[in-house]
Length: 125
Image: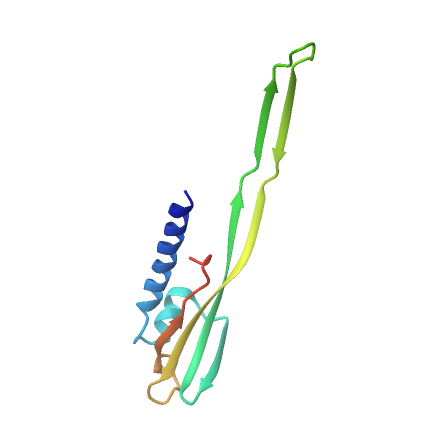
């Protein structure tokens, strides 16, 4: 089971990287068309800029109600035990970074061409 879970997570992470790789050698404006404006952008060197998208992910786990019966015995009465596990809601931030280089004047967002990206963390698929 652990091998299956690891393989599944590995493949999902690969899918995200594959999608991000599709933007390499394209204008960063193409990334914006698909994902909206970046959360952050900053210059990283002459004619180089990094764009970062912060996306909030969430997971919901339903609550579980378990009931178990014990028949008793040796003079003990039968018992029923009920256990409630409350629903869980988790939220976490995923960061997607694209490295770009200026092509032309840099006056327009389409002048910034994606040259690479940083793979997202393992749980951000």
